Image (cartoon, rainbow, N blue to C red):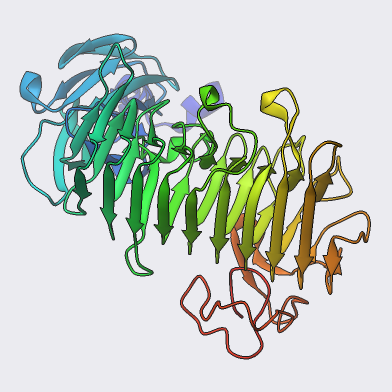
Length: 476
C-alpha cells in the first residue's frame, strides 16, 4: 500500500477516501428489481386444473416460491379475485386472500396451495375459470395465473340411509344423454323391469365407492359407437388420479338381467364388470341372463376386471388390460369369448393369472357349479414373474367343466386338451405395452391365424376382418 500511495500524486490523495467509499457502496448495494425477482415452480407461471365439476371441489395443487437472491426478501401476496374468487389459497399453512410482508429467506422457498370450487352455470359445454395470484416484492410485481375448466353435470345422489338411488323404476325407460356428464354418488340402480339406455358419447363419472347396479331382471343398454364411446370412470379427472385404480366400485349385473354394452370404456374401478346373482338368490347353476359386451375396453382396475359367476356372458372384440387381479375371472356359468385381447402387464407384482376359469366359486365357499366356456381367436398374455401361465383352469368334482380354446395365442404352462389349434408362449408383439397399446406389430405371430366362421366381421377399431382374421381385438 505504501508503494501504491507513492505512485499517486499528492493532489489525488484527497480523492482516495471517496474512491474507497464508492467501492464499498458498490459491494453493499441494495437488491435491484432483478435481484428481487421470485422464481415459481409451476410451469410457465400457470397453475392448471383439469376439468372440475361444478359444486365439487378440486384436488389441492401446490407450487413453490423461491427467493434466488443472496438477501432475505419480503413480499406481499394477493389473490386477485379476493373473497369472491372461485379459488382459495393457503400460504405457508395460513388460508386467506391477502398476505402482507411474507418473509422468504435468501436461497429459500415458501409453499402456496391452491384449490378451486366452481358454481354451476347451467350450460352444456365446458367453460374456463381464471384468476391470478400477485406478488409485490419491493417495486417488483409478478403474477401466477390460475386456470380451470368447469363443467356442469347431472348429479345422481344416493339416499344417505339406503346407499342407492333408483334411476329407472319398474316398467320405466330412462335415457341418459351426452349433452352433460353424469356424476354418481353411491349406487345408481336399475330396478327390476326397469330400463336404462345410455346413448353414444355419454360420460358417466363415479365418486369414490359409487357404481352402476343392474338389479335382477332389469335392462341396461349402452349404445356407444367407435367415434363416440360411452365412458365410465372416476370423478377425479386430475392426472394425479390416473394411477388410482379403485376410484369407484363397479358395474354390477344380477341374474335375469338383459344387458348389452357396445363401445364403452371402463377404467379405474375396483372391478370393471361383475356378473353374478344376489347372494340371497341361492343360485347354483345358470340362470337365463343375457349379458353381451362388445367393442369395449376395460382397464386399470384394482381387483379383477371382469368377474362372472353362475350366470352367462358373451364378450366380443374387447380389450381387457392392466389389472392387479385377473383380467377375466369366470367361476361357474356359460361363456362365449371371441376376439378378446387379454393383456396384463401390471407394473407391480400380481397374485393371479390374467385369465382364471373354474367350476367352483371361491366367493361362495368353493361351491361347485357347472361351467362351459368357449374362446375363439383370443390372445391371453402378460408378464407375471410369479406364474408360468396366464391361462389357468381349475376343476373340482361334483360339477361339470367344459373349456375350449380354439385358434388362440396363450401363455400357458401345459399344452392340455383345452387347447385346439393354439399357439403357446409366443410373444404377441404388441405395439407398446407401456402405453397400453395392444395393437399388433407387423411381425406378430397372431396375424392371420384366426378361425373364419365365428361371425365377427370387424375389429375393435372397425377394420374389416376379411378372410384371414387376426387373433385378439385388433386386426393388423
